[in-house]
Image (tube, rainbow, N blue to C red; front, side):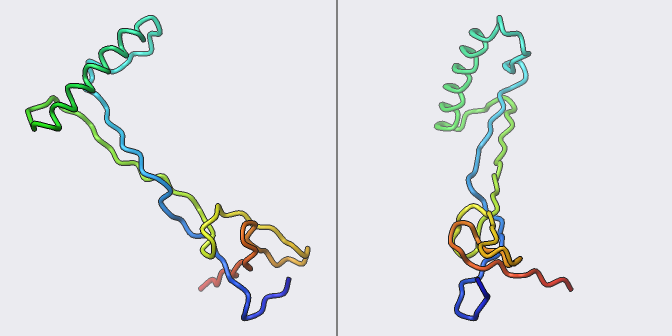
Length: 110
């Protein structure tokens, strides 16, 4: 596969793949690792979740809760958006996207 001006070009780009929202309950509800307490812990957590939902509906005062947004990123092909993976189709050192076959752009170091 030789690079011509008509061929698609690709490079790895990092994108947000999905977003995960985490809510940590107050410290007195957190699990201490004791497996025998797991059924009770799940009941306490379920109750807290219901109370949290009510709080969000009516804006009542609520104990300190930690809320985090986690952006999970992936490296994808700039040409097709597929997961970044390359291969050398002609074993000549010219890499291509394994999903769409676009020739990988060489990085220019400045």
